[in-house]
Figure 1 (cartoon, rainbow, N blue to C red):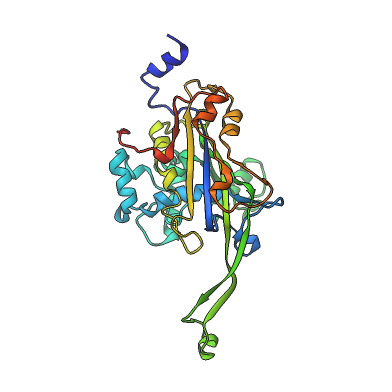
Figure 2: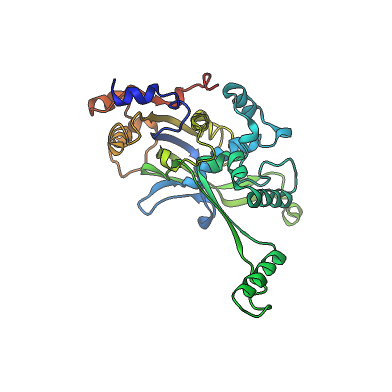
Length: 350
């Protein structure tokens, strides 16, 4: 029996988080995949003209999937279906970085105070109930209550032989830091993208000065989108960064289940339904914790290439050569165990 076979037969193998290498290929057609707040919300573009989707934006899409049905009283149909398919406990899939923090309240301040109090009393409780802290980690910096900080400053001053009023008024900070095993990179387009700028019009105006003119309302430059682009996102799972509170492979499996759906529950005026679609999400779970192959080579082989004029924008998917399993085999890389999550359905996670 090889080491790999022994690891696979281990009773903890299916429970512990495993090292994984993944690559997502996203097609964008007539959409703004990630607006740049420093450029009036226009699609993010690098200096060389290639499109950019930030890692923060991509993680936000995953968070939003859970956050839609975050509170028990308002579970969305999508989230309810996920619970039925996977058998997960929804009480452990709240979102830390959300407005209501998973609490059954409509007051963001109340939710904030609750999560801070919970973090101070028992940080592990926060980590265990919030799936985004488990997957991605988080850093929370919170000022202490002024009265509490003053009391601590007085106490600290007495210990050091200082006058009682020295240090009073300095507000100390509470910190909660957590690393996560699931990393998602920024997404970059294979070739430069063509950004189309448009004007958003509204026949029935809401501004009084426009109504008095009996004219339609317009917002010049408000509707900007990428004509066509093929973006590549690198993903990985590093068991070394998994927390000691909740090291469950099912959390990663649930993330894999919703990756193909991350843009279906976040449609908007600038991201119409079907305008951002994963073409492939290649995923490989390693048997060896140190890795079964060269990860850089794996991703390089599966990265699409523009057939002609790679430095000019594309107009359709036909402009690219999109690699597959045959290319991995030709490069001497394993194909057994490589999943395309776009064809992946969960039904055996229980």
